[in-house]
Image (cartoon, rainbow, N blue to C red; front, top):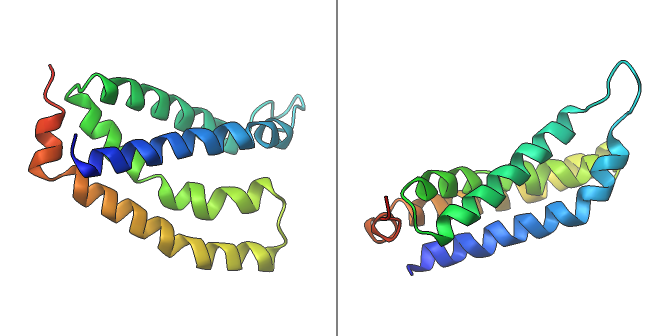
Length: 130
């Protein structure tokens, strides 16, 4: 297994763990009124959760489609690291902007590094099952 794929698995399971830790806050965040029984954040998190679970499943099976899922999951670093905690932890505006300024570059570096590693030939040939 190429190093980039191993790092991606670490990232995917870390995202899965973060989603599990924040799931209670996500449910609390949703306003269950008659006008809005859902939230955009809840929809994003459920799509992210489904994407990660299916992506890990097909990556373990080494399917070709897993490469596309892996690249998509690798691109989630900035929204999840920089945008999600301030919203879920009800940070004040100044703290939220400081959090974003601090973690957006870190998320971008993680995303760029994972995507560059995943598009290499060794990673592409790893996902070879039809």
